[in-house]
Amino acid sequence: MLADMTSLVQRSSGLVQRRTEASRNAADKDHPDGEEDEEPRRGDEPDDDDTGDSKETTSHLDGRSAVGYTSFWNDCISSGLRGCMLIELALRGRLQLEACGMRRKGLLARKVICKSDAPTGDVLLDEALKHIKDTQPPETVQSWIELLSGEFSACIGPYPVLRNVRERLAKNLVEKGVLTTEKQNFLLFDMTTHPLTNNNIKQRLIKKVQESVLEKWVNDPHRMDKRLLALIFLAHSSDVLENAFAPLLDDQYDLAMKRVRTLLELEPEGESLKANANELLWSVVAAFTK
Image 1 (cartoon, rainbow, N blue to C red):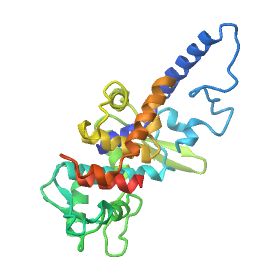
Image 2 (spheres, rainbow, N blue to C red):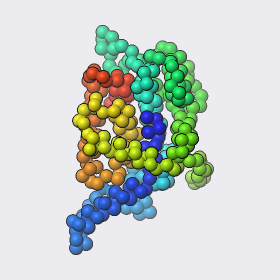
Image 3 (cartoon, one colour):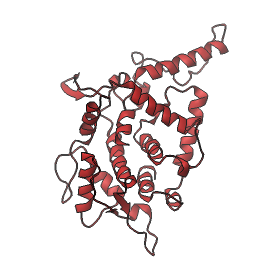
Image 4 (cartoon, rainbow, N blue to C red):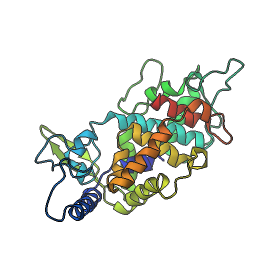
């Protein structure tokens, strides 16, 4: 799921262009005499050269996002990736929430405990698992989202933190051939960037996200794939879910966002009590949506 989240934030111009052309074709049919709507349709915003309030800006993506660059300004992505790590470890049977007890503690008040310290085979996940296991007393999901920060290289008080999470995830995708590494000049300084090279993987992921709230919508979060469900929640909280819906026509976009809102309006406490629910997943959802 970490790789999916990292891939999703890479945006390509081709998708948006196809979406824009579809809107324009529809507009031409509605106005055969050349008349124009008084208000622009979604996806027909002015180009970046014409306005500073472009879709890339509002999505916290820099000007290079059109060719597949992840914005280093969007700190929401970092916290979303930490949430992905906790959920992935839970789904792999490594982490769980402590028992709610007689007083029925809420999800956000319950501590994260290590269920199994067996290696996952992923260096970053194993490092996070070791930190969580070794930390006493245990911490809550909200605390770990802060403590597993990828932006620091030292310890915060007595707690260890992971180093360079986003960069390490990007390098992992470079090794898999999904991204590449380049040096780009950003005004006064150079920065290592990781533009998208394998668009097929991203397209499959985007299609899967789109279908989950359109053709394959099941109207029940507990019948959805848990990783896909978590990806939708965390991509939304990281301000990148729009990337997956940008190619859609207006009616599809409206329906997809309506169904996403349906998910966002769910009560995590109640959902965590249902059969086959993963409590830690819903605790992470609660941390980001409540």
